[in-house]
Structures are given as C-alpha cells and as structure tokens.
Length: 233
Image 1: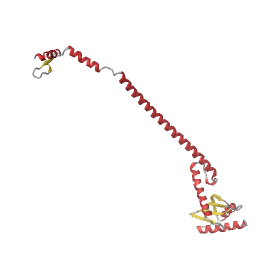
Image 2 (image 1 turned 90 degrees about the horizontal axis):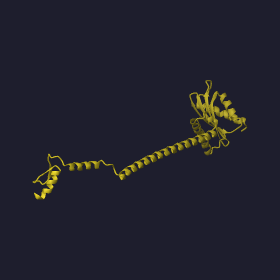
Image 3 (image 1 turned 120 degrees about the vertical axis):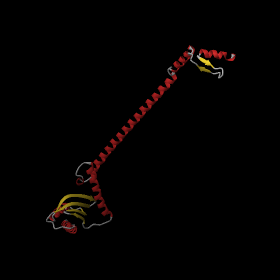
Image 4 (image 1 turned 120 degrees about the horizontal axis):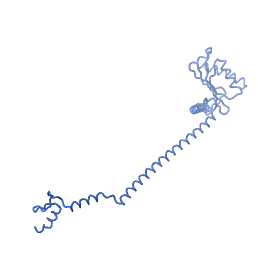
C-alpha cells in the first residue's frame, strides 16, 4: 500500500477512486479537482488558438498561385480567340481579291451577276468550254470545215460550232439561224489562237421545220458553208 500512497493521493485530488485490485484509477462520483478542470480548459484554449504565421503564409501563397494560373489561362484563351479572328479576316480578304481577279478575266457572257456563286459558276462553265476546245486542238485535228455539235430537248437546242475566226462571221451566223426559225436566247464565245467556239442556246419556233437533231445539224452545216464561201475561204 505504501508504494501506491502517492498515487492514491494524486487520484483523490483528481476526483478518481483508486482500485487496489486493478491498480488503475477509475472515475467516481467525486467532483474533479480544480487543477484538472484548469488543465482541460487550457487544452481547449490551446486548440482554439489561431494558425501559426508560417501556416497562414502558405495558404495565402497557394491562393495567389491559383489566381495567377487562372489569369494566365484567361489571357491565353483571349490571345487564341484574337488569332482566329485575324486568320478569318485575312482569309476573307484573300477570297475577295481572288474573286475580283477571276471576275475580270471571265467574258461578260459567263457572269450575269457579281455575287460569289455567279462568278464561280461562270468560271466553271468557261473552263469547260476551254477544255473542249483544247481537247480538239491537242488531238491534232486540222479543221478545214466546221465542227458542229447539236443537242435538242423539246423546243430548245444547244448548238456548238467550232470554226476559224472570220470577219463578220458571228453576225452572219445569227442572221442565218434566224432565217432557219431558230431564235438565239443565249450566246457565249471561247477563243484560242485563230479558233473560236460558238455556244448557242436556241429556241425552235413553231413554224420551224427542223424537228430533229440531224436536221438541225445539216441545216447549220449548209449555213456555215455559205458563210465560208461568202468570206472567200
């Protein structure tokens, strides 16, 4: 018992009942010692103390880094957006310049309007006509007579005549077609060297006797032969 006398006294002061069998202090109904209460209060006060200066500085630094990162991301996004705007503006300017040049080199008959679709469509038709003429020339055809192509749909005829250029030839062709009761609705020309390709869109009048592709081709061949003879060729 003497070896535990000091421990018993401490337990009594702390409001504990000392057990000789278990030799462990246990709580009893005695009120806790004022010293114990003072100790527990000090612990609570210690827990409530503010974070140290080092901890506060670290938290503030993290917030600053986050704000800086968000600012850089926003700046990068804005720079990317402005770059895209500049690229698109430059692309539109180039497209406008190219269309202007293309419009200037096309024959007037291929461009009825000045909008983008009309210019591109006219350029496609013009290139097709040139390809047709180039194909004939590259094939090495020495044309001493007229090359005539005719298609017919109902009362409309598409007529293409490839011939060497001659004075007043176009005027004589239009007069001759009118005498055949074929009215010109649209005409386009493609030239290369001394050759010219006439493309006619014609309407067959009611009193016209040319009711088939073969009859139209034969009548046009005879007409072109007379024009050639009149020109002394």
